[in-house]
Image (cartoon, rainbow, N blue to C red; front, side, top):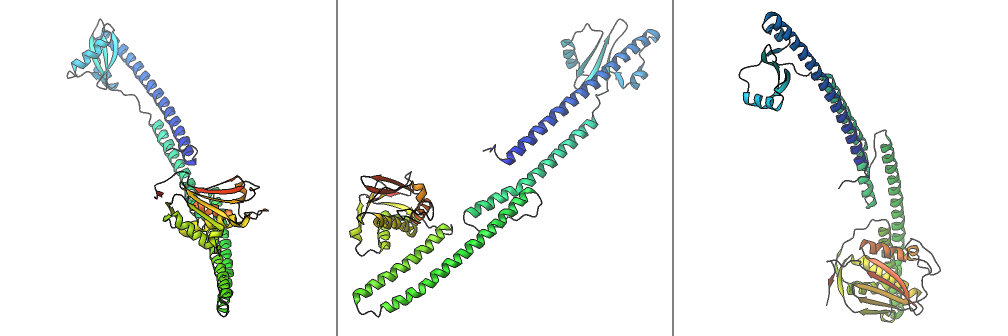
Length: 409
C-alpha cells in the first residue's frame, strides 16, 4: 500500500515528475531536430532533381557521378516491387516528383515528360548526438541526486525502528550518527535522551530494590521473634501481618515492572474462577466470605498472565471494600464479563482522571486504578464504570469475544 504522506513517497513522486518533464522536453527537441533534418533533406532532393532535369535537357543523360556525390543512386532492380507498388498506389501516381518510404528506405520517384526514374536517397536524418548526450547526462545527474536523497533519509528508517524498540521497553538501543545533517542531529539528540532515561530508570530500580531488600530484613527478623510468642492467637496475627508485608513488597516490585514496561507477560488459558480465588486470597482477609460475595453464574476460560490479572482484580476488590459504606463487595461472573460492585457515592471525576498515575482525590483511589488499567491493557481487556442504584459498578470485559475465550459449562 502506497503511503502518500511518506517522505520517501514524496521524493519518489517529485523525481518521477521531474524525469517525466525531462523525457517530454527531450522528445520535443528530438522531434524538432528530426523534422528540421528531414526538411533539409527534402530541400536538397528538390535541388538535385532540378539539376538532373537541366542536365538531361543539355546532355540527354543522367549525371550519375553527381548523384553519387550527393549519396543518391539509381534504385536497385531487386527492390520489393509488390511493397513498392502498394505504397505507390496509396499515393497519387500523377505527380511528377514524389518521395516514398519502403522498408525504412527513402525513394525518389521522377515522372516527367523527359525521363522516368526511381532513385534511392541514402541520406538519413542526422542523429542529434549532442542532444542525446545531454539527455543521458541529465538522466545520470537525476539518478545520482535521487540516490543521494534516498541515502540521506535512510537514517530516518533506522531511527524509527530504534524508537519503536525503545517504546516497547528495549532500552539498550543506540542510534548515534556520525553524519552532519539535521537527521543526524535528531538521531543524536534522541540517543542522548535515551541514555538519560536509561540512567534514570536504572537508578530508580536500584533505589526501589535497595528499599525492598532492606525491608525484607526486619520482616524476616519479625517473623523469627513472633515464633517466640507463647500465645498462639497472637502468633498467628503476627504471622499474618508479616506475610501481608511480604506480599505488599512483592506487589510493589510488580507495580514497578509494569510502570517501567519491564515485565515479560506469559499468557496462558485460565478459568476466571481460579483467577478470582487467587485475587481474594491476596486480600488476606480473616473472613473473605464476610466481605466478598462471589456469584459465578457462568465460568469461562481466558488467556491471561495469572499473577498480573489476579493483582488487577485484587486492587478493584480492595478499593471496593475500602471505600464502600458496608465494607462489602459483590463479584458477578456472567456473559464473559466480571462485574465488581459495592455500595458508595459515585466517583466525582471521569474515569480518565483516575487512570492517571498518582491521582489523589477525596476518595483516595491513588495509584490503584492506574495499575488496574495498565494490566488490563496488557491483556486487551476493557474496564467500564457506572453508578446505579447507589452502587459503584466496575465491569471487566473484552470488546470482541475471541477464540481464546472458551465457554465453560
